[in-house]
Length: 139
Image 1 (cartoon, rainbow, N blue to C red):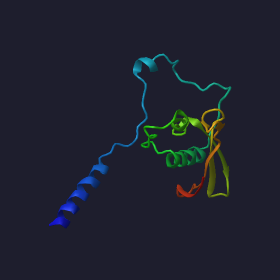
Image 2: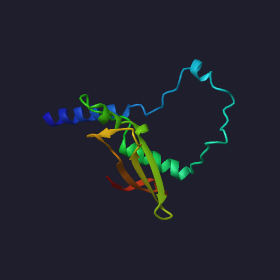
Image 3: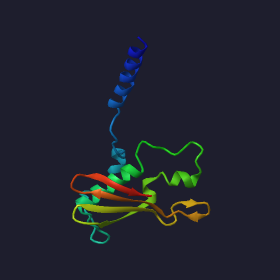
């Protein structure tokens, strides 16, 4: 009887996880979007092309390093909160070989301070670009 009750409770709780909405980015109100010039054209100056494999690998690694559903602790300092923000990190990438792309994150210069000095290296990921798996993480 006790086992049945525990099993039922486990099934109910695990079922709740199935109903979580996937992350969807916030969109600005239509009034704010209407202020942009249309059609949207990329200017020649400052334009960057990011290869699809690089964009996907950076996104995969960033989702692992800073999951979107994780928030800083309630008593976090402003500097600790900064380290939970995705826009605090710059990314660098380099191929290790044809199948593996290295993705390294560093705290953007001047973005966050830890104990009076700028925090720098965050993590380096080895991403398999054929199977889209994280092979290794070095923190």
